[in-house]
Structures are given as structure tokens and as C-alpha cells.
Length: 315
Image (cartoon, rainbow, N blue to C red; front, side, top):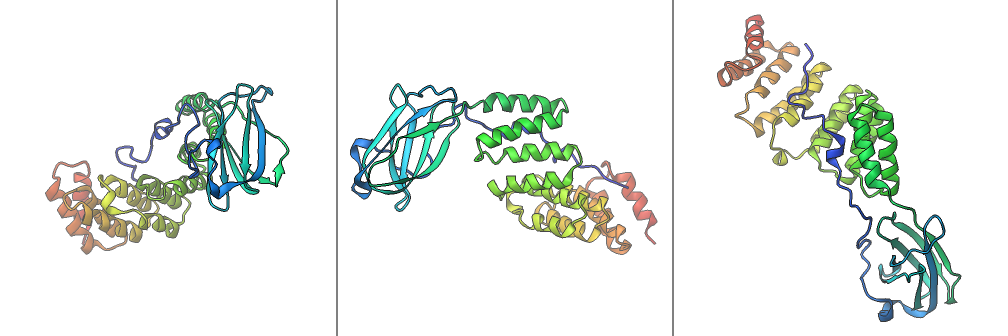
């Protein structure tokens, strides 16, 4: 018989997984904050780089922060724009500089500039309005209404503006998962894991999705990355085992349940599922002790009647 995930562990509301700052700003990239007037000897030279920060309508953006990092030493300083959006960095070294432009309610702009000796051509840095909070709220509303394609479109817009927010990949994966598009769901789970490789829930979801794609080897790879010591609820790994049982992968399910029982020896349900896995593998004699253990620990449990029937069927 097929089993369902227990307690809804594998299904989460997408919007609850993300935290998005109202303003995309702050220190990044390891640049030391120092006023342009105090140019450090490490990057002091005879070059000047000036420019203007404007919005999409061409209007200057005041008080934008332009951080300049000299690539060869990975250090630098920042300047702020004037009321008209103009900025200037004097007496800097020629070479490759990484620029990051930030302003409240605008998307961060990153670029690399080759600075030559002397006065360089003025830069024009265009910053786009950051509608991410509104887009994220719109995406969550669509997701909760079952409008998955619309939700995905809005999540992707946020991710385009903020690629550092890798958790959004999890939300996108959920939209594909609800559509039973496991190939795309797993693709975005992998992207989410790239930003948070030790997330046990993500690893469990990726394992379950791999099982749905009939790829138990890949599933076990995800499971092997889960640190048992970080798991506070046995259902996380039990859900992985259930996915495997539903695909009749009894050997892999047994391996996972061995880990669950070692970590949570006082939890009753893992014994039932391990007994089921062994019986599914035609190992009735091995299954019986687990089923009896389950009944001993949970005589009125949800699987008690089925456990008794399974024991009675063992010859």
C-alpha cells in the first residue's frame, strides 16, 4: 500500500521561507569603508574615475553608495553621490576595479571597470527600482491561490534582482513540485542547496524528488549528506523512507530507517516502517521483531492493526 508523508513535513508555504530586506543595501565584498579623501597608499595613484548614478528615467540618484575595490588587493573604499547623482574618486591606482552601487529602494549594480592612468571617461550607472517586496508578496498570494505559473514568474523576477537570495529557489521548486514536474523541482532544489548545502529539509525533499524520478542512487547521495545530529524530528528521514517504500525500494528504505532508529530509538513508527520494508523484501523473519517492537511501544498506534495483520501473515 502507498504511504503518505507524515505531518506535512515535506510541504511548506513558500512565502514563509524567505526573508527579504526592504532596501537592498549594506556592506558586501569585503571592501573597507573609508572616505574617498583618505585614499590608502595601497590603491593611491594618478587616476581619476568619475560618473553619475541615475534611475531608469535618467534622473540623478542622490546619496547612492559607490564602493570601489581594487581587484589585485581586494580592498577599497566608497564614495557617495551628490544631489545630482554625480560622484568622483581621485588619486586612485590604474588597474581593474570592482564597483558596487547601492541606493535605498534600488537593485544593487555590480560591474568591473578598467581604470587607465589619468582622467577616465565618465561612467553612467543606471539603477533599477527594486520592487522585490511587492513582487514577493504577489508571488506568495499566487502560490497560496494555486496559481503556480504566476507565482513562479514573480519569484524569478525577485531572484533576477537578488541572486544572492538563493532561498527563493526553494519556493520555485515548490511550484514545480505541486505541478509534479519533478525534473524542474529537483533543478531548483539543487540551486537552493548550493546556497545552503547543509539544509536537512532541502536534502530530504531532494531525496524524495529523486525517488519520484526513479533515481535511488541520487536519492541516497542526498540522504548521506544529512547530518543526523542536526535532526530534531524523526519524521524528516521517515518521510524519505516512505518515498522509497512507495517505489518498492525496500533496501534503501531499510538503510534510512536504520539511521532513524539509531538516532531516535524511542520513536515507535520507524520500527513499523522498517518492518514493512523487510516484509516488502520478503524477509518476514527479520520483519517480525520490528513489528512486535512497534506494537510494544505503541499498542494503540495508527499502524497497530496493520502491524498485527502483517505479523499474522508471516509464516
